[in-house]
Image 1 (cartoon, rainbow, N blue to C red):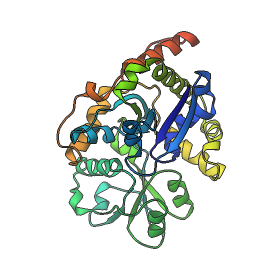
Image 2 (cartoon, one colour; image 1 turned 60 degrees about the horizontal axis):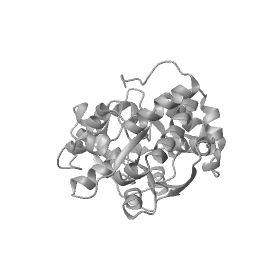
Image 3 (cartoon, helix red, strand yellow; image 1 turned 30 degrees about the horizontal axis):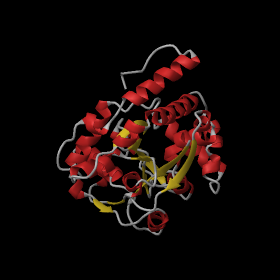
Image 4 (cartoon, rainbow, N blue to C red; image 1 turned 60 degrees about the vertical axis):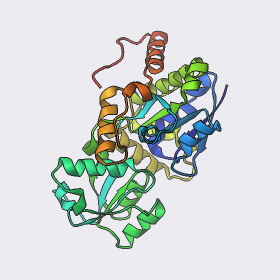
Length: 315
């Protein structure tokens, strides 16, 4: 079964996808998965709506934005990332960093998606810092943001991986993990159309089973083993950088241990988007999330491998 999966951009953050691909888990389910990298911020949702892709990987914020503006509904059926994958770096050491240090300072923020910035605003408010006191630069993407920071622009840089490791090697200083600061939430997940769930439930189930097998494998492996398996997806990245980035993500429980996208995380994320003005009203969890397929995937894999225990509902 040939499946086209659209990702918003190529990132180590999406390691479970590449473990499922290069670790043979998709193939074991009879799926021939082709991963296509999007060209802009809306590529993932547009691929599903226009039919150029069958499954997309991305943030719930994209689906929430669509329905908030009266657009079509997309269904998220498998959680991939359970934490924010960004980090805050400073130009100078800050061993006693406090969020109030950002007041009156300039932060070069990630420009590829709004969720990291909205999470930053939520963290600042939680720590009693008015976001209006912080100057954000949000028009520099990727290498341009790093270059600007190295050339002296801004006091802080918010970056993902491997940019964080590269900036540390260049003399930057890590002051905060945005994953730890934001707390658990379904940052990225797989989505598709309601029509595909209805017409091809077995395909979506097999896809979810493959993901869960990859998640189980990752939970039992050290970071170097994960970094090695995903290596083919990042051919130009030094192995040492890849291993350090994976280890940092493992250390903060970035990746979901199973594909079930639970309501507490959905509510937490929706509150961040509402408070930040990205969406204007609340949307029902059941309209945008389907957990039945993920639960069936977990149960069938557990039966096949003889695992003890059911789904952890405490997450």
